[in-house]
Length: 300
Image (cartoon, rainbow, N blue to C red):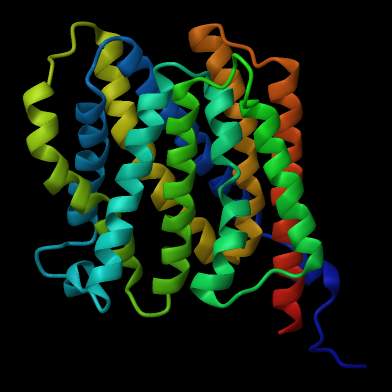
């Protein structure tokens, strides 16, 4: 008997701590969007909310990683791609926060969760990871799910839907570039530059639009927008250290629950039956794509 052989149960197991951290991280991302919606619906300028969100995270990262002496935080091996990636995340956030003025949280997350499906399409030409027939079927079904949510040609398909589609596309390219740079850039620089460029480049647009919060709830929402994004990203890093990143990915879809619940509690929004159906189709397609990628990865 080979005592070193791992059983399937052990191989697929995930430490409870990693599960808890992953669940909490995606809950934090839901809190981020809910806080942003609270602020922009209440009259705060979108660019200023975006800037505050990234400024808090950038400041924390400099302190946490001791940026005044840690060269790994500032190091760039592929500066052009780092800059492109560093602009995609704030671009995604801008489109998302603009759309949140008009769309329900459940509607935006339904479209944003299609990003892994788009990544599967982009991975072929950009990473050389071509999808097989089964994954192409899952990709096609995932796009049907998005169409169910946005319903082009109906009154549901308004111009804010284009904003959330733009946000999803920015996130998709961001994820592809992350995978491309992960083997050559330091983890510290990858997480830092995703917010650094937003702080520097958006400051001239954001600061002139700054408004002093008038209510305690607005102060709280600003703090939550910055802290939730920061804690969420740091939590994902920690969870990925405790377990393979591929095992953390499926917990992404718990955001459907959090966003629907927060949308109802804070704004009285409930998704209609078509949106719920689209959520299920998109989530099912994304989970199948994760399963196929995980299964093929084990064979290599």
